[in-house]
Structure formats: structure tokens, C-alpha cells
Figure 1 (tube, rainbow, N blue to C red):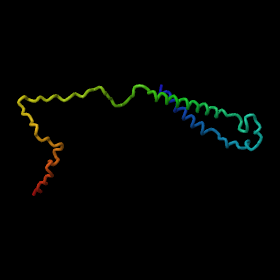
Figure 2 (figure 1 turned 90 degrees about the vertical axis):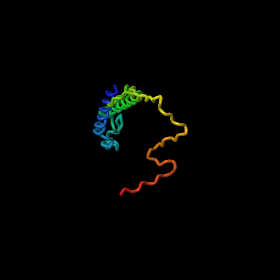
Figure 3 (figure 1 turned 30 degrees about the vertical axis):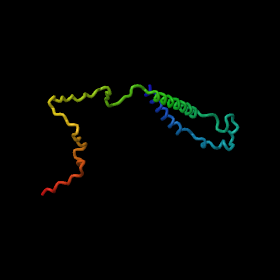
Figure 4 (figure 1 turned 45 degrees about the horizontal axis):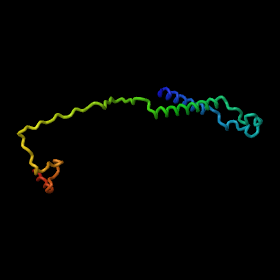
Length: 135
């Protein structure tokens, strides 16, 4: 449904552009505006709306209606989102197997220092002197 309205919307937009460019502007017939004979007609100096003007008005109204309907459909959601990438959010990553500690393994004393977070970091006592240059 959304794609069909979108195609109609694009066709109306292209037709409007072409018809507006083909339409003769108000300045093309300035003679009657200055009293050259046709100013006393029922519809004024311009005359009744031309067929082209009526078509442009009709297409403009249809363009407004399709714009509004596309906005409403987009706000409600078209349905299932589609993607080119296959995603399965319910797929579970297997957990790492548990490591069994033997019963005769030595226990770590409570006062043992913790391992440094960064193995390349200097000890807490201070910086380490750089090694002598190799010859």
C-alpha cells in the first residue's frame, strides 16, 4: 500500500512540475488589465480559469492528499522492518565452559598482592630504570 501511494505521489509531483512550467503566467496577458476591451467580463480581466489551471489545482490537491496519507502511514509504521542483513536477536551465544579446579590446588593467601591491571605498567614502588642499550 505504501509503495503504491508513493508511486502515485511521485507521478503527481512530476506532472505538477511539467504543467506549472507549461502554464502561462499572469503577466502574459497584461493588455486586458489596462482596459483593452475585456475588463468588463463576468470573470474579470483574466477570464475564467483555464483547463490547465483546473488540472493543476486538482493535481495539487491530490499531491497534498498523498503527502498526508504517506505521513500517516509512516507514523503508524508500515509493518515488519526489512533489512538486507540477516539478524536473529534471539540467538544465544554459548557460555564458556566452566574450569574445574582440582581439590589439591594451593589456596591463595589473603595478604597476597593483586596482579597489576596492565602487565607493562611499572610496579607501584616507582618507575623502572630503562635497560642498558644493547651493543
